[in-house]
Amino acid sequence: MELHHRNRCGDHWPLWLGGIGKTTLLTKLNNKFSTTPNNFDVVIWALVSKDYHVGNIQDGIGRDVDFLDGSWKNKSVEQKSIDIYGVLSNKKFVVLLDDLWEGVDLNQEICGEMGTRNKIKKDCLEPEKAWELFQDNVRDETLNSHLDIQNLDKQVDERCSGLPLALVIISNDMACKTTLREWKYAIEMLKRYVLPKIENEVFPLLKFSYDNLPDATMKCFLYYCMYPEDYCIPKKRLVEYWFWEGLLNEFDRISEAQMQGDNITNSLLKACLLENGGEIHGEDHVKMYDVICDMVLWITHEFETIENTLFVKVRAKLLEEPDVKA
Image (tube, rainbow, N blue to C red; front, side, top):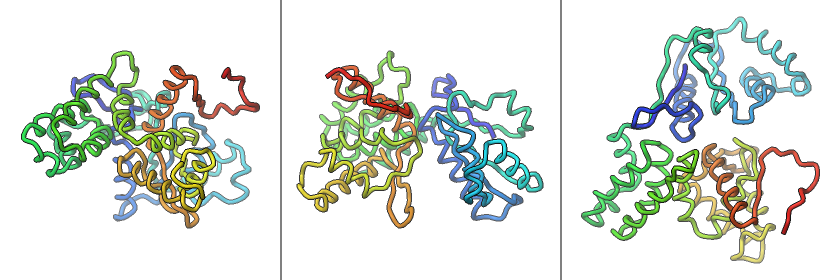
């Protein structure tokens, strides 16, 4: 299966554009294979990620074919390839590759070599579907609070260009705005965020929600960029980090600060800036959408350029503290 998407003007966007619903579609396929009878012996879900490593993808496959024991982790990429081939060569299987980015695009030639039968074009939502999604999240109470809001919210919807994640995040943020002045202000701010000089126009759109966060929540939100992509973050330990970094200022004791931290995490989950990572070893975890993670890195880069107060480089593998001018 090959996924393409394009905006409403018909221009093609690259496969790796975040927030269009690729992972949601693959999740539905995975759940379908897991809950209904099918002809496959094995269903494999593997994350590729931007800074992909073949060994990590092999580990994802290994989990689904019960390979992850002590000896497997010590094997080379070549040895793992032989093991995977040995198990799957006599089985009928499906592989769902999620989080493909630029540089690993499945173009027409590769899909032809793989014997692809059907190619599904994943587009942004058409105006009617986008409007339905936006309305579902804003809620009738807000839409009916003023006669002119129903006309203005279509303008907000149009600024999202049919991108599902932007529609969900911005509509959730607008759900609590019930005055005409708030909506007019939001539209003006959204117009300013979409600037020609920004290479990825998704970031400014999503930053609209970030700019509406309380100051303490903003600082904690930026902290997430310290974690690798697709990393499940333990909520309790994260709040402890926030406390010792001085980001939580309502309480002096960590046991009480946990309440403030939980409140911040829940607000980010409700705003769809975070997603649940599930329970691992009895502890709740959270994750950050890839496009949101990149937006956070973009924001920290802007801070570095403007204020020289913050810098982040993912997977830089520093061996010593860099020399930074105060």
